Length: 152
Length: 152
DNA sequence: TAATCATGCAACTAATATTGTTGCATGATT
DNA sequence: AATCATGCAACAATATTAGTTGCATGATTA
Ligand code: FES
Ligand code: FES
Image (cartoon, rainbow over all chains, first blue to last red; front, side, top):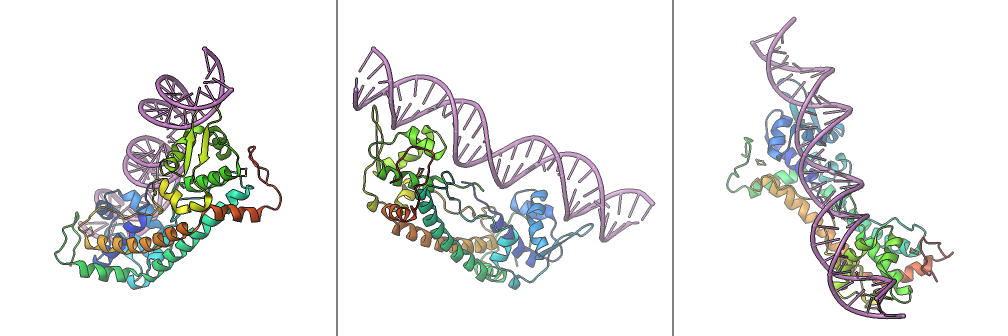
């Protein structure tokens, strides 16, 4: 099963943007993520629509944080990405009137619901400012990154 | 993201097998699941290897439960299927020496780990006998199913 | 005003993973 | 010997996401 790394990547990008003065272009971000600019625009469009970032055209344009990191949680970004499915396991839907399938699915769904609620609650309690702070603590040696964003 | 419904389907099958006298052929099971026999064999091979079912060749052959339902939990079956990834979201792995990515991933991984532990613990507490019992409760009218397995 | 830079959007292509299929070998029953 | 059923491996189909290309639009700069 393939993983959706958009949340992880967008969080990374947003924290970087906070350290970065001025706008970050899609091209720059794409280089950082090892992808291309259109994918970045596509992914960040959701964040823009929810008001977490702004995008500006023309010279010196690009992406800018629209809100302080302390006001953004992991859950916010998850939702801005369309709140994609968290679980890779799903319920079978053949034989909907089979009581056994119903019982199986009800049991699985219950367990998954509970786990999901806990996960989302955790996401809601972590702010991007918290992540930025945590990353500062890890900063012993200035990690050498693949693009020219400042690490200080 | 596509869902892995093998767990749900296998649970369904196993509970049915308990009600069904004699062996169930891959073909029969495949018809029930709307798939084909080879897929069934492939999926059930893991359950056989872990000793939850046996398979027999030749006339009257097929699949037979090797243990009582009360001795099998959802977690057992999940593991027998190779303990596939539970989450569809994953951690980005570009820039492994970027402290920001590290902090982001550590936070996500922590939350996911906790949710996963809770989910698996729940799976471990539900037996297939429990599911069978629950399905009996739901049995108001005998559901008409797509194949000739008895519902009583 | 013209050139350049950057996003926005839509359509198309490529990569990937899973599922489904086919064919043949093996063993069991009748 | 004929039939039934699994075991296994190789192949094809399918679906979904990621990535690409092309063009339009708006902003800045000269
Ligand atoms: S890419 Fe995150 S620090 Fe350079
Ligand atoms: S398929 Fe589950 S009851 Fe018939």
